[in-house]
Length: 398
Image 1 (cartoon, rainbow, N blue to C red):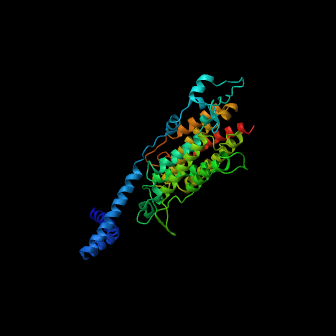
Image 2 (tube, helix red, strand yellow):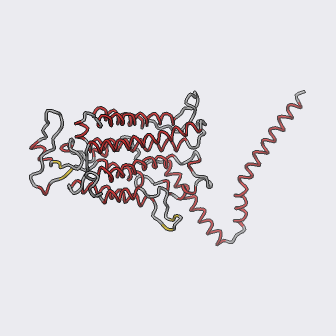
């Protein structure tokens, strides 16, 4: 009596096996055909094609390597950047303002008025030795661009990245796109920051001349993010090469600033405007995350969830450094408006959010028990930081 049932399930599994074999045969057929065609060619053609194939294999192997290893990734990097230029006599000085030499700071000290705001340190006795405080925002921006293109390979312009997975863009697959999305998130912040440096922070008021170094840095960072040596219009410069120009220009600006030759306009209204731009940027990214959450709840199997998450993470990673630097550049403003505690809360919240580094990104339903929603958590972290920025802005606007 069981024979018909056994035969039925036997046939079912046979059909399944044949179906799997048919699918595998379709996948392997182009490779088998190419192998037969290759064996029938002459040795010269074989050598040329073999070298091309070896080059492709090496390119993809290198691509797989650089996408998996993140050099010098450190959520505490702002402390290292600040420590490299720590100068006690400049602690309460606005960026671009004169600072005393260590000997003068020791001899004269810095006086504190009753209101609690530090006065500017005394100018050096010899005008030729006068120096001004550099911009930590400009230095942090240069550091992050250097992190993207020198300490790590710039993924988006690599040939293997542009070729994709058999023609499918990597961002539409679950593979090898996390680091590229992280870099693009940082680069979004760099473009925003250099724009603000050119338009408001790097010149006095709106009628003064734009600093050429900052303008060149902004132009460089506006370059196509996926440019290779050859583009649709012919030979061109690859993205990393152009971004390295931005590093040089930002540091050239800071060099001129320390020599008191250029301007950094550290006014409260400029800080307010800068915070407005950052809040808007974070709000836009949180909306992108919300759109992906509403579009899919496939959990671990959403191929776009990982690049959305790491783009937002890169943005948060970069803004943590930029806002830490802004506190130094606008130190006197922060003290005068009594927003020190608010600023510390902001940076602490952002640093805590950077501890979220899941191995696999899930975009599950927000009420799911099995599939977490990492995108919802990241969106919450962004909006939390944004709300703190809005609160600081409201204090500045009083």
